[in-house]
Image (cartoon, rainbow, N blue to C red; front, side, top):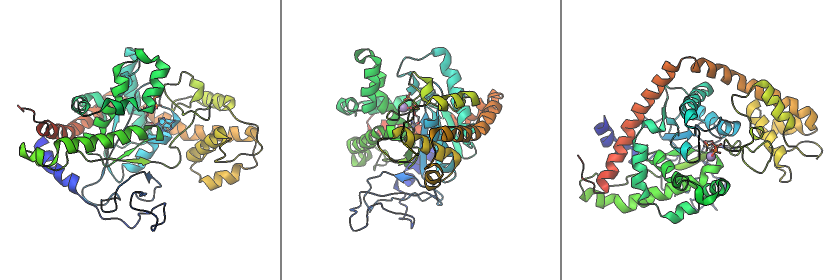
Length: 408
Ligand code: ATP
Ligand code: MN
């Protein structure tokens, strides 16, 4: 299997898809010099923040026999919240219909900050069950646990040798998290986390990575690293070593949903909703009870302006709550703007509470069903890991070869 995939990879990485008619650019064609392209897979409104040149394939060719590939994952730390859901998981459900998708639980990332060993395995299963409960369909997507595919860590080591430390020192998330955790005492893994993330993506020759805005910088690093490794070890150098030559890694593009890309904290509209925030009040967890949801919305931060509106920079909490309401109610931004313009917080809060409960309830019911059959869940994860391993090993073998290692 690994061999057949190996021979398949050049086809994957060279497959150029024509510019589809749905391609649209935010900049008028006369002003766009080919560095800004927006991508709309199917009828969805995903935005691709790519910097492709126009001569390169730009739009995912979703109907061809070789589907474009997408990977994404969530850490099994704390509880999955609305930001993870609206910024990532909810979008996967649509993407799995048009792309070759791999969704994993990034347990190796979960140990970058101090964590509870007794909780890790449970959180990993919980997260997998939430993926399925949210609608990830294992007949379409591979669902697996990152640490079950050893190639992730192995590739990370190889990539580390090609990663300038300055790139890692620049990462905003490292700066923020290490400051919070007490600088000198944080584990090295917090610094090298983006290299592991790069290996998560590059192993699978991914075309697109749907991420919230907080991950944009890490994805940019992944792209730079892919290009650097291709340059250092790919092409003719690789061919001389007996490889196929050409690029080793596909350079992935971020796919960022226009709304929900950054769900903000309930207690501070200027910081993102986050698993690692110590205050549970700051987030809606996907498994929160009706009472907990009602209570959190009742106590969330608001303002004292009249009426409710989107996009007022002086009203980050208002924009955040309206955006959440829009996404969970399934209404358009215009509909919500109109519906809520004359409301006060007293009338809006029950509305958003009910919309949240209605949206999350079916997910919670399915979650309970899945968790009551752990043999099924573990089977799904084993199958997903087997599929992922085949693809990952092919990439890893290519890189070992290109880097000149003696192979068994
Ligand atoms: P941590 O605080 O531990 O970093 P997190 O809440 O940021 O946790 P991750 O597991 O790091 O969660 O992220 C999983 C996915 O969820 C990523 O794709 C990330 O971009 C997305 N995501 C996380 N927080 C938000 C948010 N507030 N809004 C939108 N997307 C988010
Ligand atoms: Mn995060």
